[in-house]
Image 1 (cartoon, protein in one colour):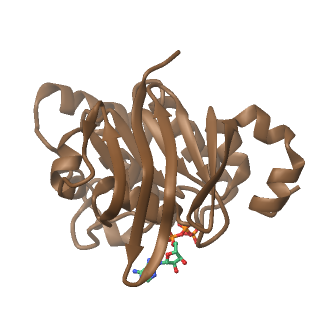
Image 2 (cartoon, helix red, strand yellow):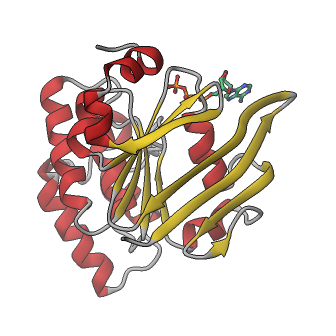
Length: 236
Ligand SMILES: Nc1ncnc2c1ncn2[C@@H]1O[C@H](COP(=O)(O)OP(=O)(O)OP(=O)(O)O)[C@@H](O)[C@H]1O
């Protein structure tokens, strides 16, 4: 059995007066890709933001690598080894591709440079447009920059929010290929509405419905369960 890297235990998060996450429980195991699924507004992004400390859990515990990180500020959580690729990608539009990468670097040691080389081999467009402003990249290139930037630090866990959003099928394939390569080295928690991508990459799944974790299991079990797919994901 692989080790639990991240655990959410009875997590509740409010945004203003709205009770968004309601006793959310789930685990991410080292070396796996865990996919968080659910309809629009189910609370997937809020879950990632709560893990990163960008939304505060009002009760419950987030444990990472055996440490309670629930009350830590976001920069400390990032330093513990969690990379975040937000839904809006978080690109600095006026900075070049190279500057966006350097801003994201925790250190510039040899290991980081090696990871940067690896990421640029994976996404040759980033090398090609190294000096181009981030704002001028295509949607797919911005997604690649955001993923590559999270990868160059030595993180134990990457949180990736809907990487397929707005991308053409051919670019979705490219993003799948890149996450597939990254998962050999980093554990991933993926939020994804594109079931094709989720099933290609995922080992385990959790479904959120109205802020409540309602189902979990192996991705193979979900692929075969037409009822759950229809009820919570609106497919099949
Ligand atoms: N800043 C905010 N202020 C008020 N309500 C918010 C805010 N951010 C999120 N919400 C609400 O929280 C709920 C969960 O939103 P969240 O973005 O986590 O869902 P999601 O599952 O990621 O949805 P999607 O798949 O559409 O991105 C929604 O009802 C949303 O309207």
